Length: 160
Image (cartoon, rainbow, N blue to C red; front, side, top):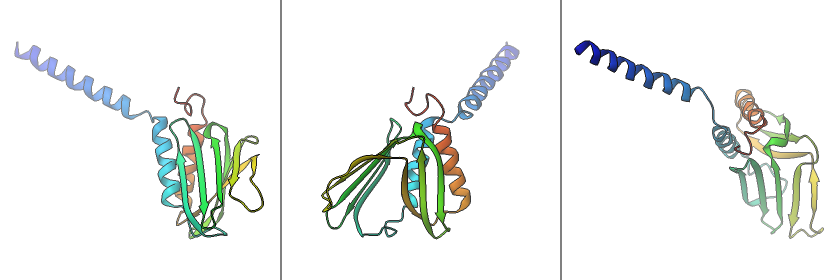
C-alpha cells in the first residue's frame, strides 16, 4: 500500500510540474500588449514636442488598437490610431537620450484626426505614427520590435 501511495504522489507531482511547464512556455498576446503599452509610456518624451503638451494618452487596447492622443496647451487635439495587426516595421531616429519612434503600417492604416486647430480640422489616413521617446537603448527597442511583430501573427491581435 505504501508503494502505491508513493507512486501516486510521484505521478501527481510529475503531472503538476509538466502542466506548469507547458502553460509557462506559451506567451499570451495580452503579455505583448501590456509590454508595448508599458514600454511606450515609460519612455515617452513629453518634452520632445514642437509645441508644449497639456496632456497625452498612449494606449494599447484589448482589441489590438494603438491609440495616441495629444492635447496641446492652446487646446488643439491630435488623435492617431491603428490596428496592431497592420504593423509593418519600425524605425528609431535619435540616440539613447531622445529620439522618435516611427511605427509604419502596411497601407494607409493610421487614422489621423485633429480638433480645435486654427487651420481647420483634419480627418485623414497615414502610413506611419511618430512617438517621441527618451532614455531607451537598442536592446529595449529590439525587444519592443519583437513584441510588435509577435502581435502581427494571425488571430493574436483580435484575441481570437
